[in-house]
Image (cartoon, rainbow, N blue to C red; front, side, top):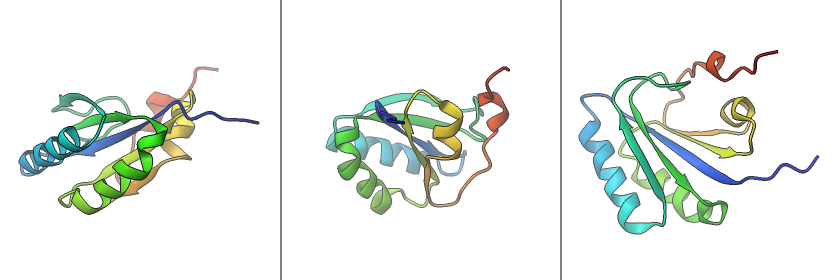
Length: 113
């Protein structure tokens, strides 16, 4: 089975006390890399248990973006996952965490049988 990674997402999680740190991470990503920055979500959305914003980047940028996030995440939790077309597997099985792993609400990604 040949699974293609179309892109990657990094979900940068924050709360009211760390939103300014998340803004610094976002600014660093925007000035250093060719990434697509998603909107700020100030409430949990989808499988994400707390506020976050999403960063989309091409597979060829992984080796640049992820190490930078490792060193500059400002103590924030960040979920990085590929986009292969299988949202559940991408978030549950193919993901990596920088910082503390949060409990995702994977029920929203379950496919209807």
